[in-house]
Length: 87
Image (tube, rainbow, N blue to C red; front, side, top):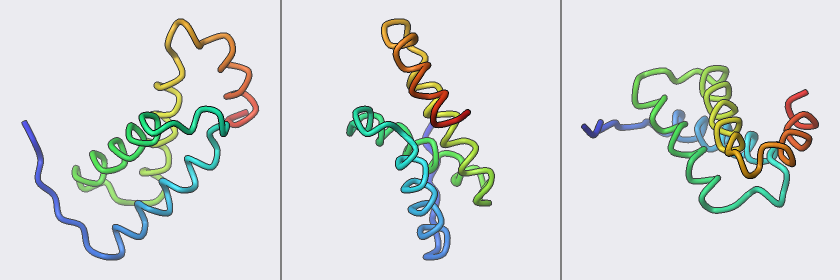
């Protein structure tokens, strides 16, 4: 099922700001197109649900980052990188 949402200019600016802030926290070697697309997708999905506060969008985007890096092959190496970013 697809959700059609429309976003006013303020919401678009907010989503862009959240995206840029979250991507900036990802170690540069992991800022791939696919990882950025996953983060953007999560932000859009949350906003489409009507949850459009900066705090909520940021929290959900950070959850997506954590999800990206929980794959079994990368877990050990990325755990160190993520602990530097997320404490």
